[in-house]
Length: 179
Image 1 (spheres, rainbow, N blue to C red):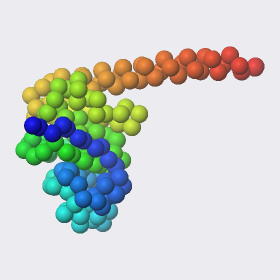
Image 2: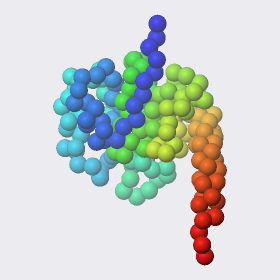
Image 3: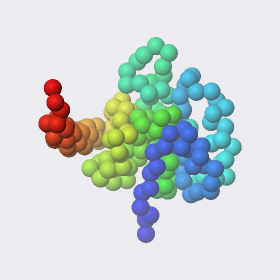
């Protein structure tokens, strides 16, 4: 029987706390290229006995070429997805903030193992803003050009739902405002 997919999307700080205890998770470590001192990653690197395996890639959170930043490359996304397809179903994916690069990679890993409409449910759009370039690269690797569209539709539905709620609350609140 296959174990269910368990993906944690973490910031660097959350991941350093996470690896301090023993787990059966596989770590995807997305590292910034120049802004983060290498010593910050030492805890994750030193605690290798506390997790099953790790893959490390370095690129910045950019969606187009920008001076001083390194954009994700197809080969990097391909390495991560090939690696994740060969190991278990427990992943902790981290980047610096735990919002963009990590959520994109986590979504792509989930898309390998389930329908994208189910995979998108791992995202919390209050926290996660997946990097569209990473998802476009993942579409190429996975041979599915619908992944970005599914994610954007889910984000749109999320924001539309809460925008309506907020508009209703704001309308009720503004009725009490005396000019």
